[in-house]
Amino acid sequence: MKYSLRFWVQKNRVLKSNKLILEEKDCPLILNIAYDNKKIRYYTGKHCDFKHWDAKTQQLLKNCVLPDKESHYSFNKDLLSIMVKVGQIFEYYNSQQIIPTSFQILNLLKVNKENEIIEFESPKLKGFFDYFKKYISDSLVSEGRKKHLNTTYNKLLEYCPETTFEQVDLQYLTDFRKWLLEEKKVSKNTVSCEMRRFRSFFVYAKTFKWTSNNPFNDFKNEGEVYGDPIYLSKIERNKLNSTEIKDERLAHVRDMFILQSFIGCRVEDFVSLKRNSITSKNTIEYIPGKTAHNSPRTISVPLMPNALSIIARYNEPNGDLIRFISREKYNKYLKELFELEEINLVRIVTALDPKTRKNIRVRLCDIVSSHMARRNFVGILVESGADMETICSLSGHSKGSKSIARYFNVVESAKSKAMNLLI
Image (cartoon, rainbow, N blue to C red; front, side, top):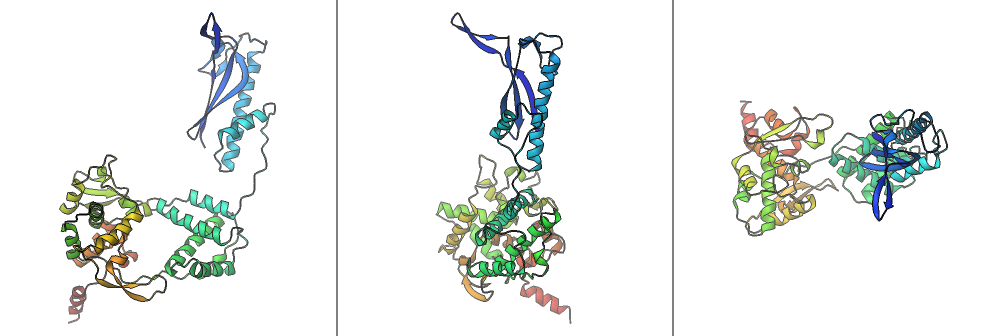
């Protein structure tokens, strides 16, 4: 934690002949302490005449006469002692990885005014959840990832607030997984994600020697299972884009969904896009938040006329690409949009039930979400014949990515084309 110190002489305000004047004799010396966007004023207990203080060297001038006959050497030595104490305070709080309050700093200086060395209370030993919070804070991951880590933290805290590193063993992990499934009623895929994030914390904790325990050595985490990806056809997307919608709220959500379908980014990246993300060549550039810290790369997507037409309808004062709404409202309103009679995207599709992992028949409007826009982007490109390397480049997937298969289906025409190669 960086900090800065600066002494200054505060002139005395004296009332003479009914006038308030500034007196330059026997003035108090103040120390300004600045850190973490905070400023503190500390009265040093020292006094000097205004003309005897050298603001440039931050010292009392040599051979000057002080009111109490103190030498300039002793005066400056006391100031150095105060600076050393402030340094000790910040060194201590840095070691504890804590940002101190103004009260904590001023109180330590006041209590230890006569001491050469600052006396600190013994720090409290950190517990399991203190370290988990520190892991979340220090991890070089996207904000979206940190939200997921906080979810795991909260579930662990709810499950067993007294958890310690030593307590977590194979039985603990097995019981925690069972609790998530049976008590919290979350899907098996969600449980797999929670356990994977929990394991990442233990790997991090062991690396920093917070614990020597590694309970995941004998624990087998089930992988995530996904059904066939569901997305709009090009015809459905274009119909949705061209249909006049009288409800202004749903028309706006339609614009968001179509624009995201033409850009192909994740929703957390989509809502952070600005008009200045558009280059002079009418391409939009962004760095995906999911990989910004470990493998940052700029994604460049050419904007089609339909996308530019939507952007032109909005001119947000804060520079946003479009008027964004919360992710929760976005997903909620999309379901309403798809049910509109003039849209009628209620066709029955086969989806995987996230809790039972069995195929179920549901209406498209019941399962639509912002993430479908990203699947629209990839799926339509695949069905239109774009090569996979180009699609990965446009969607932000790494070359040879396996996860991109969750975004599209292999169409029958492609299968027939492949089978003709056998003839």
